[in-house]
Image (cartoon, rainbow, N blue to C red):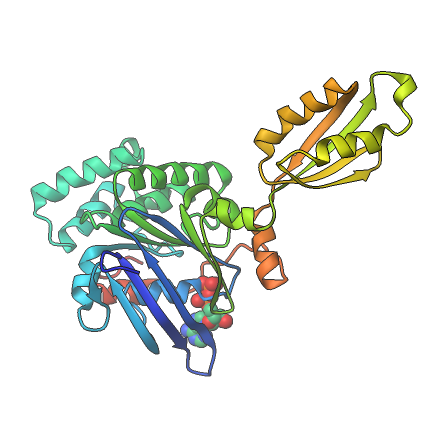
Length: 344
Ligand code: ADP
């Protein structure tokens, strides 16, 4: 951890009234420009963590600095430095998309002229310019989520905190939001999101912390975490090109490929081999060539890569189930804390 961290969390503890240890002493840090994810199943402590970071919820103990500011000593500076979009979107259905964003801009202290140009820029960015005159109440779920994200960006915060940004969306809207978030990150916005979707974490985040029952059980890039599992598994079925050589062919194939540097383990299974390998992209063409040179054809090859679910399984003994959350509580309290007024 260094002084340049945009988010620094040390030994963070949150015990709710009634005794639930929602966050049980976690540490992590995020560098400016990173795309960082907190991945975990329902109830892991993700929302609690991100709400504490956004100053909306008091921690029990520990140290949290956001954009260089201590969240207890300087919460206003923290709030100015972040954009925060919650799971439950509480938009004002009766105002138009454009008016809603204008209001957000003015509430964040932009001048009318600044707000107008920022709103148009953001509407373009998320492809909502053509529906900006429509009432928000007529928007689809994906459009609502996009406009809420944009509202979080109106004051050009360097850090965007997102609580399960695509939960409950249809696949097409989800893809649109992913593209948009990747684009924002390329433009230099640091993003910290929570998710229970492995695919989301895998696809977007440069680094993830896997959280379970209030504890971080693993941290690293998705690729590195998956590589810890032990690499890809290749299944190859083989046939001899020369019938006279069919006897002992499988054993021969096993010994041929088993000695290749990228193969960690080679076992005979059925009419083929199962190989554990560190790098399947290099392995596949080489396997085919080595077998072919020895009069053996690879008749089918499949590669199974470890997933982040395998990583979760390794560290917790359980599998993440991508349960759709209901969205939960209203964000009215949140908006009033931020001084943003009601938008029921
Ligand atoms: P996640 O976002 O990963 O689903 P949460 O942070 O919402 O997890 O919840 C973590 C744990 O804290 C859960 O056991 C949840 O039931 C509990 N919890 C969340 N909010 C409250 C609350 N306001 N009061 C008491 N317990 C809570």
